[in-house]
Length: 131
Length: 109
Image 1 (tube, each protein chain N blue to C red):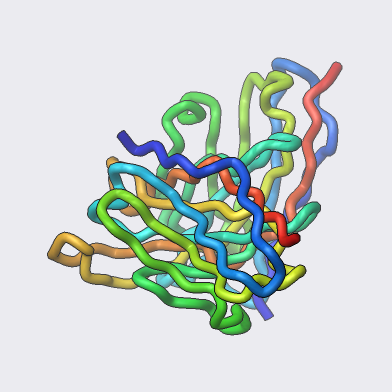
Image 2: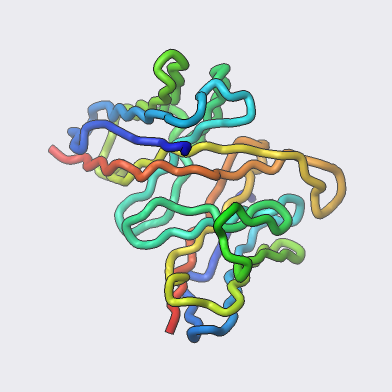
């Protein structure tokens, strides 16, 4: 059974760097059918996509976070990571790692595109930014 | 614009049908994906693509769309369906750029 498990420090000081890891079990992070993502959720608020990575290293970031976020994969450890620099209280959130997969589908307006969705989520790890 | 909008909250009587809507320009050309999130839990995929459900998701969950609006329909809502529901679509920049709606809190009365 495929599982994702996030880990990292629960408390980070303002202006420092947040570093999280996500261990993948039951699947290979090098599986060419899958992409891997980080999503966060501030307390009492909605989901915010941070970024997505393919095992080859191709990355895609949410624009507001692009200058501070770095997502990477370690295929030897079957793990993905997130680094977020210069954190503030606004970065306090539960951070989820997730697996994404896609398939070709006919668009409602014609033509085809790849429809991607998240089929597996980690349980999340809470990070508080505070001095 | 890649933004998605959802009603903050809806309520439904036990056993009745509720429709949760999601609006956004991207939904004219691309299908939404829907996630359920119960308090203290990770999101759970409920519907994706035109109207596909992962294994284990009851058939009372279905999706439809019209114009720039995607809908998640719960037919015969159960107490266990009380949760936050998020729509997701691709961003205008491409397949791998996501955007989530703000979420709808569904209360089953």
